[in-house]
Amino acid sequence: MAQVKYVFVTGGVTSSLGKGIISASLGKLLVARGLRVTIQKFDPYINIDPGTLNPYEHGECYVTEDGAETDLDLGHYERFLAANTSQKNNVTTGRIYNNVITKEREGEYLGKTVQVIPHITDEIKRNFLALGHNGDFDIIITEIGGSVGDIESLPFIEAIRQTKWDLGHENCIVIHLTLIPYLKAVGELKTKPTQHSVKRLLESGIQPDILVCRSERAINNDIRKKLALFCNVPINSVISSIDAKTIYDVPLLMRKEKLDERVMEIFQLPIGEEPDLENWKEFLTRLKNPTKEVNIALVGKYVELHDAYKSIAESLIHGGARNECKVNVSWVSSEEIENENVEELLGGHDGILIAPGFGERGIEGKITAAKYARETKIPFFGICLGLQVAVIEFGRNVLGYKQAASTEISPNTKDPIIDLMEEQKKITKKGGTMRLGAYSCRLKEGTKVYKLYKSEEISERHRHRYEFNNEYLEKFESKGMVAAGINPDSNLVEIMELKSHPWYIGTQFHPELKSRVVEPHPLFVGFVKAAVDHRIKKEKNKS
Image (cartoon, rainbow, N blue to C red):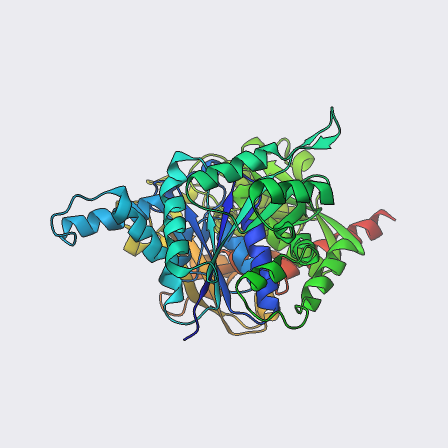
C-alpha cells in the first residue's frame, strides 16, 4: 500500500481568512488530477461537536450522511470535491479530551499521570491519521481551526510537529495561510504580520512549506522575495490568494498560482497533465453570464449572520447557475413579519424560502410568510421547520384547526399537527440525539418532486426531533396538500406538496446538504426555475 500523504493547513494573523476554501480548492485541484483526496477539520473548541451551538456562535451545523453534526467547512469540502465526508472528518478538542478521559477511566494508561504531552497529542495524532488506514485516499488535507498563537490550538500545533517528524518531509507538509494587509495611507502591502505569524509557528517547531498569502491586491515579485527570505521558504512556495468575486473562482486562482503543482513536487508525485476542470469552468461561465434574474426572500431568525444558512445560500447559487439565472437573496427576519407588513416585506419577490430553525422565536412570522406564499401563488420552499410552519398554517386557515401548532412551541395544543417523534420522547440529552443523517424517502408518482428527482426512491439528510402527525394526513390530502414523499420504514412524512399551487413544496429533510457545484440539487434547480416562471408571468401581466 502506497504511503498516504498529509497536508496540514494552518492560519495566522487573523481568523476568517478562508482556510476552508483554500483547503477545498486544493482538494478540488488534486482530485481533478486523478488523486483520491479527502479533507478533515480539527476545531479547537471544547464542545464535542457543533450540534448544540447557537448558529450565531459558529454558523450552520452541517450534517453528514452518517449523521455527524459538523463544522460548516465540511459543506465546502463536499460541495467542491463532490464527495461525502463522515464523523471522522470533523474532530474537536472536546472529543479528543473525552476520548482520553474515557481511556483513563477504563485503566488504559496503567496508572500513569495523564498529560497534554504525550496523551492528548497522541490522541490528536491518532485522529489525524485515522482516515488513512484503509487505503481509500492518496492525500488527506487537514484544516486546523483558529489561528496560530491561540491557546486552544497549541496541542494541535504540537501534534502536527510530531506527525511531520514521524512521517518525514516527503509525506507531510504544512501550508500556512496568512494576511498581507494593504495600508491605504502609505499605499503598501505589509509583510510584517505574516513574518510574525511564521515566527510563532517556528517557535512551536514547525517550518511551513508553503505560504498562501491572502490580500486585496496582487503580491508582486519583490514581496514574494521578501517573504521567501524572512519566512525561509522557496519563492515558488509563496502563493498569492487575492480576494475573489466568488469562492468558486478560488480553485482556478490557485491553479494559476500552481499551488497543486507545488504540493505534488514536495511530495515527489508525478505532475502529469493539466487537471480536468472543464465542468467547473462551465459552471463558472453560467454563474457569471446569467440570462435571467430572480429575487428570493430567505425567511429565518438568524438572518443577521448569513453563515447560519450557508448551505442554503450556496444551493441557491448552484440552482441559479443551472438555470443561467442570477439569484438575488433578501434576508428577511421572521420576527419582523406580521399580517400588516407581509406584503411590504415579501411582495416584490419571485420566491419565498422558509429556513430551518428551532424554538418559538419568529415562528408566527414564518407562518404568516407561508400563508402569504400560498394565497398569492408565489413559489414556496420550506425546509425542515419550513415544512412544519407550512402545514400548521394550512391546518389553521384551510382545515379550520384554529389551535394547530407544534408541540415544540405549544406542548398542550388541542391540535398537535407537528408532534415529537415517538423515539424522541424518552431522550433528555441534547447533543447528537436528533434524527440525524441519511434516510430513504419514497416519492409519489405524478407529483412535482417525482418529476424533479426522476426517481421513485431517494435518500436525504435529516436533523430534527418533530414530525408531521399522520393522524391529520387524510384531512390534508382531501384538501389538496399531499404527502409527496414518505419514509418507507417509519411512514414518516418527508415531503408535502400543494397540488393547486404552481410550486409549493416543503421538506422535512435538508436538501441543501446534498447540493454540489457541478451537481445542483433538483429541488433548488426546480425552485429557481419556478421563480423564473413566476417573474415572467408577472412581467407579462404588467404589460
